[in-house]
Image: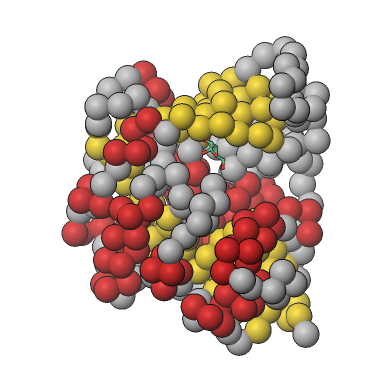
Length: 304
Ligand code: RIB
């Protein structure tokens, strides 16, 4: 089996604006777009586009937003038989996207809050599988899937986004954490890690790999054995929404293909960058060939 994503399915309402609204401020834009999103589903599509076989386990309501999400999954080749329909509306995200590509997101979690670990069929958890998790569905249910994956011999890649304080058990059940810079800082502050060495201290303390995604600076992989930097791939950035999810999807697909961590880091950087080329989280993901071509241009260097 390839990649299993246990996570959120949202429909995104995207509002391009000149600059993001400040608290108490109203800003006017010209138009909006409705498109499938959610950190879980974004990861699933990114992994599929990167060439992995993918199963998506998520919860939706009995509504038109659910149809939108299902249609997108089917078109990309991710089966929908593992989606459960619950008594709550499909989750919805309001996303303001500024001219410089930055965003600001509010999510109404709806059906995501009712996703249960029991929705994951035994056949989805295999010794050679990679499970991708985030923090937009209940943490306890994600933790149960992480522990099942590990018990079966599979690997767990956990994006701590949107950041929440996680118990020690979560860190003990992950093989790889994926965090952006503010999330690394929040993790450091909660667990008393040094701000400058937070990722490598976390890697040593919990015996795992930590990937810090740093936008235009690329990404750093920290393991108990060392640290490696991958530069950012250069693309024309239109919208960074979902770039971290695309990183995780391409990274997970690479691990499922048995690539070593450093190659997965390169693929993740390429996948994350390619996803920034159009408005929306799922509108410009790189194909397997595009990711390979761009990844081949990135030189990973060991940090002293
Ligand atoms: O990471 C981007 C995603 O965050 C969006 O698709 C939105 O749905 C929110 O979950």
